[in-house]
Image (cartoon, rainbow, N blue to C red; front, side, top):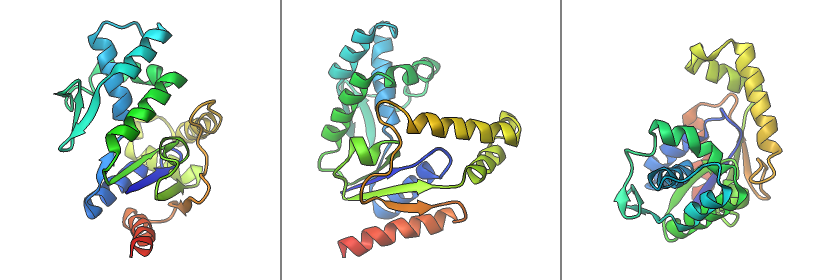
Length: 213
């Protein structure tokens, strides 16, 4: 079973997906870790991040798997290596390459075959898992999302600056040439603006339970 969630930044996708994974006994799939693993392999092999073809080759040949909830790269657990400074600095660069995204999406589908998972992102329901049994699109008013982000990270700037950043990111996400943020046909739309995390979880689980039982 695949539960896929998409939506803009600040709607609570990660928090809610993790909670549902715990409640439902699902594996929480962090798709970003696949790009981080490709980035880590490129670093380990001395690859040049300015060499597009080399980046694509790394993505196509990286052996990524999930065993007992642990993330493996070439058979070695790399849970503690996916968030070092080198990976943080280069993961966004490598994930912008369309051929890398295609290779990673194929790997995600192969790794998750036969697993019960919940995943979230920008193109989970439209590109990565277009045939997911359950598709959701979370949304919330920009001002509400900015207020959440501002309260969580008060040192990032003024509320107005955070709001402007949120709106700019929304615009960029919706106009990406590959993996743009869209509402998938048949997706259940949930506005999280004035709902608690628990209330959103209950809405998602009610849809799943109604369909399963």
